[in-house]
Image (cartoon, rainbow over all chains, first blue to last red; front, side, top):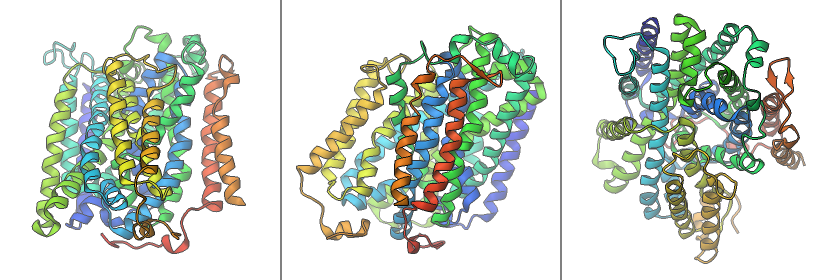
Length: 494
Length: 74
């Protein structure tokens, strides 16, 4: 009961912050979609980092460490520290500069302009939306699992089927409503404010949970001593090739449409500096405690389900008040991604479909923002409906979603660095990615087979290669782009 | 020259990530962190250092592309 009250209090506080940040909203669609490109260094770090960390980072990492041990950190977190910042450096900065110069609000606007192709935009739109949906699902499933874990027995008369715990359908409904409320008020600006607050909350609460659980287990050394030794190494838990091939997955940040939108909110290129440097350490501060909690759980709840591990450990060792605060931290991590994804979906729909098709002059700013809100509600309803079906493990779902985005990375990289790439090459790359992703996803029993590998490597390797090879081969066999188009994107064109 | 050095460092970091020599080492550092996790924790800190160097030695934008210009083209 105490946990439920604290979680409720946190959500009210968050709504208050959303309403407050809405006072800075300038009422224009530019402010709603890219905060008038006015976000400074610290807020950019918090919003970019908060956006990339979701249930995958807290619930997923704890569950995966519980399942396959400490190698979880290396295969995703430390790789991400290196590769995410590389994407910000080599892709994000250039896209920010091009976005500012050419007035882009979405990724698709950049691709349409770079490749001079309407069709590419219409091809990419549903694919990006369909890849964001599982990302949203990760958040809803993670939130539901954690809240259910920490509120066990709190409401025995209301929720008999879940032994008195708040059921996942209710958690999903509440957090979607809260996030929708504050992004409706101030768009990406409210998302940036909420992300800053929520990122601080989940980093502090994650560290707090770590120490409370360690204390509950008799100290750090005792906590590790009681854990399953086989999970302290990678031998027997993963192969070299599997570990190596995870390196492609963090490339997904180069193609996340919601991250693209956050990059565009930066006041200047210098605003990126803090993000570049601090992002790897922020990942470390969030993931290391979760990995150790997952490891320790192997000795405490050896039969637990991976998604439930974090909630169970918090409920067991943190006490009701701290348990409530830590759960609020987990929800913060989840909502700080949901908000950006919601805003982004609305932006893409209005800019890439409605305005692109009918022209900007046909609608007022208010109409554009309302259309964005309407589309977001539809997608949220679909995602919410999917979250009520048979749930997958958060980590597996996340890996499939990120594999799709990561496999499209060659397209954005080529668009920025390879003058010879053509619209036909880009379209071939997108189609090859879609086909390879669908085939492998079906073969993995729709993500249910957690051990699914292709020739010992992560499926992302083959999906990525399908995209890369198609992109290069088709580009080389089709007509090179005109020099005047290239001059807009490259400093030196002969 | 400095730019090339940063690019080599990025490549080296990628290679250093493949710590196969710690694959089955169960040593606990400070009595509680498995060495495989400790190594990658340090790796994250060094990644931050790498990007610090990259900012000062290999910044990809020219000076005129860096300027603050709120509301520009938006």
